Image (cartoon, rainbow, N blue to C red; front, side):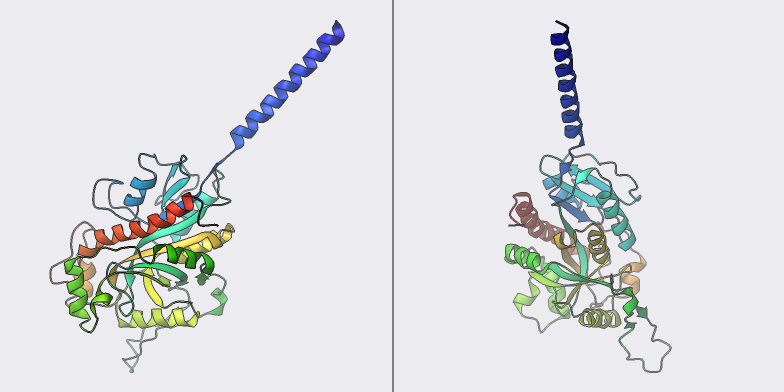
Length: 348
């Protein structure tokens, strides 16, 4: 009898151990995220008002989800997760520091399984006036750091027409330029290249007035591949324009300089630290140009800036008329990619 009791107790203890191990394994299992949508800012609310970079994506993929607490997240960062579909939305704050710190906080948190996660950076940007039009969506094939290197002020020089103000420094070569996965870029481009895009009559009139030699096809927005220049300052003007072209050519980027923005080289560098560089996709919608258009001055563009939901002055021919349609263009193209990721088709 005692032998049977001992065997029963041994079996019971073994069963409890197995159940405890199973319970621990279940508790330790992390939600696998299929995609992190990285936006940089939102305008006021996450839904129902003038959309920033995150709002349309939040409504589609994380509607109703509460902000997730992430250890060591900088004050600019917000992270939302929909565990049912495997999508996360990160708002980083503007600039390279905010973007890199916010993404790093998420990827180092240990809260989710990122082993097969794609990172898709979405946002607005300024377009190369020789290559873009208002409302374009640019699929980035490379991102270069506009700030790293040596910038010089040519005002004090007698040759006032000097336009190149930047000189490279090879000591930054490991992180000053990132090429995105060319196979992934091509697959994504084939998915979105024919995506219909919105524009406005005012945006078309602005381009036609400032670039009278362009034909109708060049006035209408399209999806294009191009190089991004990441800088921590907004800038306009022919000197910055020529410098941006020079930087992209210096790094032998696969596509022309197309867009200026403030975060994507930092996002790519951060992803590389977590062995995710080959799963980064970057999209930018063009909401302004890198040259001063007719009627613009530095003062009219930035001197009395009062928010994305108010137009700039009438005398400034480049207005925020295009911003909301461009955010829809960004979402229309981006959602094609995200849906493909969530359905498991991108990696095939």
